[in-house]
Length: 337
Ligand SMILES: NC(=O)c1ccc[n+]([C@@H]2O[C@H](COP(=O)([O-])OP(=O)(O)OC[C@H]3O[C@@H](n4cnc5c(N)ncnc54)[C@H](OP(=O)(O)O)[C@@H]3O)[C@@H](O)[C@H]2O)c1
Image (cartoon, rainbow, N blue to C red):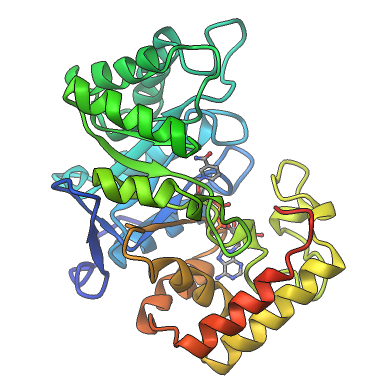
């Protein structure tokens, strides 16, 4: 069926400025790491993207290797954009992709060389049938390639018009600072940093967020629901079709320990008292920090997506709730997701 975007799509979403840049991102962004590959149902994927856009999500996050099979999330997304986002709708989208993890055989198929990054961007554009992406990321720091080379490749991507902005992902505080400084020097400021951040994974609080604020760089935490752990999904075991049940899912059943479930149960009780789902509470817990531009969720259904976006109806956590959450999180199990 032909798609006509909702005329109300900009009515309710919150848009936050990304660092000190000119661009605003929706408070909730959608990532295509899982659920959008060749192993997944195309029409479900398409309905999630349509619904996201109808509710004001303008930012879609990809990477060269998303699938499985690697590359197929970009292919599927490109087909959806071509079919559904016709006319000038491309101009209403912020599409990101990344290169850094293994994508093709040989010494030029991963990490941070200029050779790999720029070839990969060309491949991504072909797969998505796009002329440009909005954000191109170095997906992870490369311990062997000079940071100057990786950052210069991002600068080239932007200057060539194949990307509008540069981003970095998974860079720890000291290397993030250096990367941002190099990009500033090159005249292509770093738009955004994409770290893993959730109630269960808090390393960004030890310096990174401070650096991003200092340099006016946005922050888009990935896996804000700890891949589904910070929801009610696993409270009664591992349901069929869930990420932890799938051979290709990155959430491993071994991570769902009794200790972890007990913590989730306690967090869920606080969420219930707030008339929120645990997923919603986990998202607003991140959004309470003004240094967070947008949270980058995943979803395997329209229902999950809707539930997550509805977190914006109740954004305030009071001091007592924050203290209770902190107390539960302090009892962190040793194995983190
Ligand atoms: N830069 C990087 O290195 C990196 C790494 C990882 C991810 N990312 C990005 O971050 C995005 C999000 O990562 P993620 O998918 O791990 O995020 P997430 O939001 O932490 O987890 C998403 C999963 O949680 C479950 N879920 C979502 N909403 C729910 C709800 N309301 N109720 C119950 N369950 C719910 C679903 O699991 P089920 O599938 O079981 O239903 C969904 O697939 C990725 O798509 C990607 O764009 C980047």
